[in-house]
Length: 316
Image (cartoon, rainbow, N blue to C red; front, side):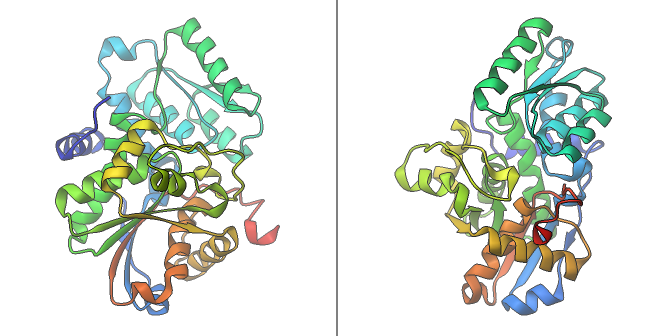
């Protein structure tokens, strides 16, 4: 697949316009005061399915020809991509087949089911997930929609940053979490196409720091036995994603889970909005950086807000 450009991002915006929310951009006086900066949060926690993933899934599904779409779509996912693909497929009127590990959060299992997907559970290993997906493809002819290593997915995720820059064009830095790299790659593409002066920074947990190590090494280092509460940031970088990050991202910050939990709770208390740990890593990076952010205008992509309210991290 080729690397998308700004025209692909604009095509994606037009394609998903009537399906996805144009999410609000908010600021918070307490956070700005604490950092001595102006921070603009792009609230993808208020997106459909509660995460930015709907943008990419919607763009990918509605990009398919009728012939490509007729047998449905399939993916293996433990969370937000599963929900996003299930909803996008329902809106397109085609079946979605989702392979989920048995240990996926209950809140995400029920959400995928509510969106009407056909769910197959498997053991929680990558080999089992891929093998189960292969069986479904052989049985149904469904088309795989990879959660991040896909140009249509990346272009769709890029629409969040493109909208943010419409609202706040003179940012100094944009920060986004990185797991597989779909959101950060899209953010970098949209941002650098509009202004090479705006820095793009990724954030990941120290217990799942494969993106930082991969960029430092110059090749993909797979995520092996990651340990973090940010369950959306456990995956290894995709090939296409790595190529974009290597060329367009200015750096990757890492944060400890303890600071992520603090940032998540602080954001809930100050803004009265729910964000999940993966989204809170970006605010944690700002808190960690301290004075380096003083006087700057910073955009933050809040990746999602899907949280199991029975298992809040500060209560465990």
